[in-house]
Each structure stands twice: as structure tokens, then as C-alpha cells.
Length: 617
Image (tube, rainbow, N blue to C red):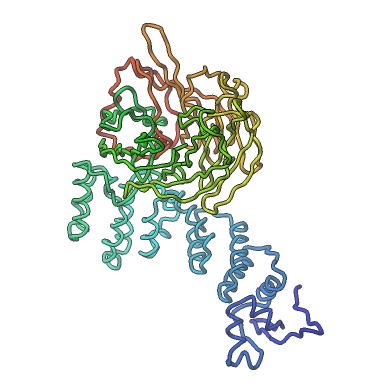
């Protein structure tokens, strides 16, 4: 049992009176720990003069545990009720560290389920426990259909502010946006006399543009609650107009994540197609019309659209970044826009889901210049520097401009590395440096945190390589392929390595035998890392078989070698972009396939599961 101790130097000078007892403590220690005590005990108030603080709303046990935390920095919490009581007193006394500590203990002691999640959320919000609020909301959003079915009356008894907060979330798991509208009606009818006045406020959170046109016309616009409110009626008519005219450029809402599907955007000679792996379905988006932009190579997702950027030389030591945008929902292209740049582009990549970045470097045209500058080594004087500045720059689609966010000289003269982005980290894997006229291959792996502007050395990759492909998901990084010399690729047994952030270790993972030149890109589809490959066939004319090979499932931490033939074509096809999410409903009117039956390979049926999920590459 903890009790603050008196010493010769410091006697207890404060008495805390609680519900079932008294505790002595030190004024200075309490004041330093708690803004509540600091103000109370250093004022002209009665408590400061008498040295007595009445806190009779709390028990001796709770106060004793609180004092133990204040004096020692820790306390043992054995029961759920103890954790709750400590959260309450910590909130009252402004002891933020104790509140965080107790809230985490509560999260561990409480087995979150459909019966207690709503009451836990109310408790967490009432006492401002940010982490507990976040975890509880995540549970409710992911399990809302089950919670509603099991605790229907509890859900329907929620206040209008709680309902508005719930329906405003992108994370809310629903089978269709139509279900959200029906839920709003049910919640209103549960107490219509008192709730009808909130209808317009709640209705704003129904994402009407993601509801089918038939449902909008037959069920939404005809409902008396909608018809009787001019603002609601206007919202429905706007949504119908957007659907009719395919005005999907500036949508007021994103689709909820449970309604998004992954897809692979694939191009052949002159058209773009969209493949939905889970549904094993194809649609044709349209012809590639990017005008003077030229050949389309890669598309990068950014804020609901896809962008392609290429580097074009304009004069000696000068380039321009040319960017064109594509909206897959309405098959429209923007005109190419150029931005002058006197640095050369080493890599364009996507981080944080849908933000486009570029790695730029200051050009050096001396004997150690980067090979991608197109100069011949040895034709110029020797550069005295072994470091040159590199920059991370971010693309802003609203202004079609690039803005520097970081600079560093950490990479030295390293080339041929594999760049992989995950969260706020950028990984630079392997590569080489020039040593005279030879390449010195590096096993080094470096991680840059562009939020904190910090570098960290990670465990070395097992096989040094150049120009490998990489992908990351759920704290795992996969590096595939690459060359170990000018003339030799990585051997088949060492093609694929996996890095685990939690252990800082690299492991080989097995792969199928993939012919040299057939591998084109690593893709992430719903947490699973795939290789997109093409193989040339000469039977009955020249054709290309395109396959997806599943290499690793990060959700289950398992290796797999599931191969799916997805397309056979007379042309080479390219997976154009990293994984992005799309709303499948916007493609319902697209032409299925636009490929003859003999061009579509007989892919196996999609596995059972959530057909709302998939990846746009």
C-alpha cells in the first residue's frame, strides 16, 4: 500500500480528504505534477491556506494509486474498474500521463465487443482519451452491421450528434450507400416527433453520388422527408445530374472505404483497360488520348485521379517536368502542363497512399556523373566532391506544381538503388557506386523519415543488386529481381527478399521461375504482393500471356505462389500504376472488356470473400 513518505527535508504539508479516508502528500510534488493542484495550492484560496483539499468524490484506493503514479511514475492496474476510475481522476486533476497510462490499461482489460463498444466510446469521449476513442471508433466502424443487428435499440437511441459523427466517417463499413439512407430513415422513425428536425443535418452525410440512379429516383427523391426539404431535394438532384453527365471531377465526398475496390489499370498499344482481380472482371476505360505528351509509361494515383509525369530535355543542363492527368471515372485527360526544372529526376513515386513525390538531384557533368544524365564518364574533369544534393519534391495537383519538402546529401554518389515508400518512410535499397570504370555493388539499406528529416541505417540486404523492383505493405518490404552485374540478373533462388520492420531482418522468399525480361512490376493488391509478368508465345502467331503471381500475403504473413493468367493479347501490356482504390459502381456502364473472347485468358474463378475490395495499378 503506497503512502507518501516524510523526510527531514520535506514534511507532508497537504491533506487530501477523500470519500473514505485521508491521505497526506507534499504540496511541491503535487503542484509540479498537476495543473489542478498547482493553481489550487498556490493561490489565496482556503485550500492553500489550510493545506486541506477535499476530493470526496474519489475513494481512498483511487487516490492512493494516483499518488503512487505521481511519486513513482507507475502503478499496477489489475481490474477494468480500477482503470476507469484512474481515467476519471486523471481527467479531473489534469494528469495527462496518468490518463494515457490508465486508458491503455483499460483497452487491455476490456475485451471490446458489440455489447460494450458504444458505452466505451462514450466514456472515452467524455474523458478525452484520444487513443481509446480512436481504437473504439475503429472497432465500431469495422463492425457496424453486426453491432446494429445485435444492439438495434442501443444504436437507434444514439443522439443526433453521435449519428452524424458515425455517418461522416470514411471508415464506416456498409454493404452499400443505400443502406446508409435506409438507416437514417429508421433512426428518424424511432422517435420521429423529436428527430424530424435533424433530418436535413443527418441526410448531408449520405453520400448520394455513390447511390445508384434508380434508387435515387425511386426511393430517395420520392420520400416525404426529402420532398419536404428544399436543401435535401437539391442535393439529390445534384447527385442525379452528376451521374447522368459523369461529372466526377470534383466530388464532394470520397466513397467509403468498404465500397472501394482495387483494380489494375492496364494499357496495350492504344487503350486503357481496368481489371478487377477479386471479381475477375474487365472493363475498357477508353483510348489513350494524351496528345503531345507522347507515350504513356506510368500513372500515379493522387486525390482520386491518375497522373503521368515524364522528363523532357529542353536545353543543355535543363529539363522540364511534363504532367498529364487522367480521370478514370469519366475517361477524360487534361492537357499536358510543363514545369521548368534545372535538376534531373531520379525517381517518381507515391507515398502516403495517394501523394506523388519525386527524387531530384543537382546535376554533375564531371567524371563521376550519374549514368542517367546521359553523359560519358571520363569526358570531363574529375569532380572534387563525393556528395551532391538531392531533393524530395511533392506534386500539388490543384496548382499543377512541384514544391520541395526536403533536401540532403546522404546518398553520396549512389545509383541504381530501389526506392520504396511506406508511410512517412522512404527506403533506399542496394544499388552501386562507380569505382573507376567498375561498379561496386552495395548491400546497404537506408531509411529516410521525411516528417522528422532523419536517416537510419537498416540491416543489409543479402544480395546486392541494381535496378530492382520493390513494394511495401503492412510493415513488410519485398525486393524482386535486379542485376548483380552489367550482364547478369539475380539468380532465381535469390530473386526475392523480404524485409520485416519489426525484426530488422531480410529473408529470401521462394518464387516461381520467371524468365529474364518477363517480369515488369511489383503490385500490391489488398495487402498481397504480386508480380505482373508477361511471356511471349509463338503458337499460332505472336502473342503475350500476362500473369499475376502472388508472392506474399502480409495479412497472414505467409508466402504463396498463386498464379493467375489474366490476359492474352497480340500486344505487350503494361500495368500502369501502383495500387489505388476506386468506386466500382462508376464503371458499371463501361464496356465489358473490349477484347475478343480469345484475347481474354480463362482465369480461374475469383476466391470467395469481400467482393467490394480489389487494387488499381
